[in-house]
Amino acid sequence: MREHKLFANHKKCIFAADKIPLLGCIVGKNGVRPDRIKEISDWSVPVDVKGLRKFLGLAAYLHKYSRNYAEMTVHLLRLLKKNVRCSWSAECQ
Image 1 (tube, one colour):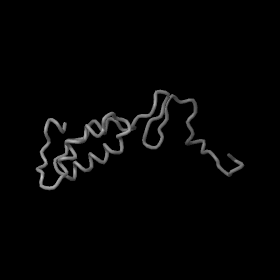
Image 2 (spheres, rainbow, N blue to C red):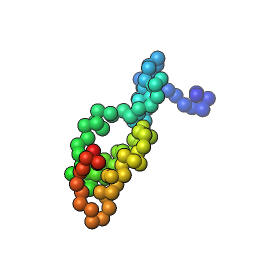
Image 3 (cartoon, rainbow, N blue to C red):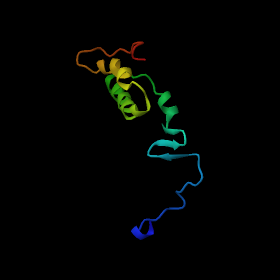
Image 4 (cartoon, rainbow, N blue to C red):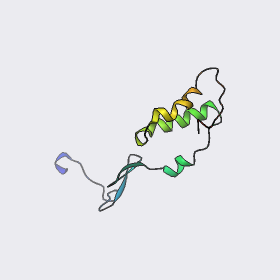
C-alpha cells in the first residue's frame, strides 16, 4: 500500500471482528444485511403519494435483500398512476 501512497488510518481500522459496517450494510460471515433494520421496520404507513414514493425509493434501494421484490411492490406501484385514489389496502400492507 505504501508503494502506491495509500495509508490506513488506525483509528478507523477494525481488526478481528465478526461483522463490520460497510457502505450502509453490515458485512459478516453470514452475509450482508442492511444496517438500519429497526428504522425500516418502524417506517410509518404512507398517507400520500409523496410518502409512497419515499417508501418505494427505500424499497428499491433494499431490493437485493428481499425475494420477489416486483411481486411485493406491484400493488403499491398501481397507486402511483394518474387518477388513482391513494388508499392503503391489505394488499399494500
